[in-house]
Length: 354
Ligand code: IPM
Ligand code: MG
Image (cartoon, rainbow, N blue to C red; front, side, top):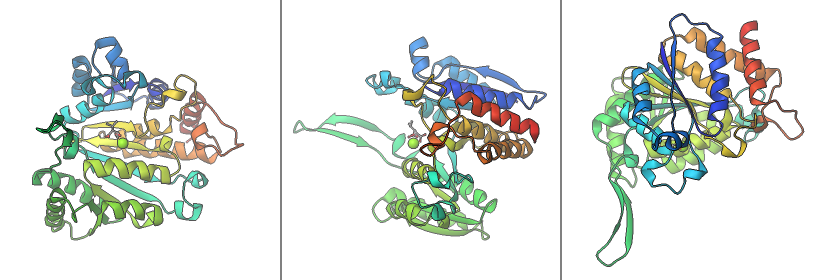
């Protein structure tokens, strides 16, 4: 197992340290780690957010565990030098087209949700977001029109094979869960979405056991708040998935709890918490390491086919939450709070006890 550890910026280093402790607890026989700089940290040390050495390390690994990138000090750099470009570059260079973002409610965190606890309790969904296409990677520029006005544009497109391969991921994920798939698009306005919908319907013929429905993205945003329990697996494009997955994470209580996987066609993956680099609390032992630890669990499940290890990590996380341990982001006013390291240590202790 070759694992690249890319900690990145802000709280990245602290949360990665805790995830690494958890990995080490398994004393896996054939594991090799390689670390590399990424994001603003890499820009400062090497002049680029995704230096060639880092890309090499990521390419040579079976899986990448990623912390977070983003640094306000870099906000005024040219776009291609900003920390966020590292994650976009890795997704593209490694062909990571399938982004799995589960949103589940952890018992005990219901009152952290923006929703009433009885509604929040019903959240158990998986967003399958396409990650290599759409308006993210189309031609884009700010140009000056003949009459002198500036115009910004970003070309939105999906080719049918791109839709087909992510649709398969969505249907297979649904087969492994509640057998319901909601495809989210904007087919009432966008031609890109009309093709998306047509292709998803074609692919559905191969999955007669999965119940397929379609939803416009605006309605989906509303339904997620109104009745999130209706969703099992949601498959959608890059931009809509970006927005809906942030929404879903907040409904589930804290963005500090949710892991994600970005997979290529062969099971190689990049695993990262869906939260950002939180520069405001960096270096203060305040960050919640659980999303990164849960991302490591996903790595065992999807890349290394070790569901046993993944289950144990996930059980340990539920265990520490059950004991009432809370970092600041998941604590109610007045509840006592533990630091990043103490939370990591508690997960370790729960693992050893399990
Ligand atoms: C995400 C992030 C990225 C995205 C940014 C940092 C480019 O928001 O992973 O959801 O938009 O995909
Ligand atoms: Mg996002």
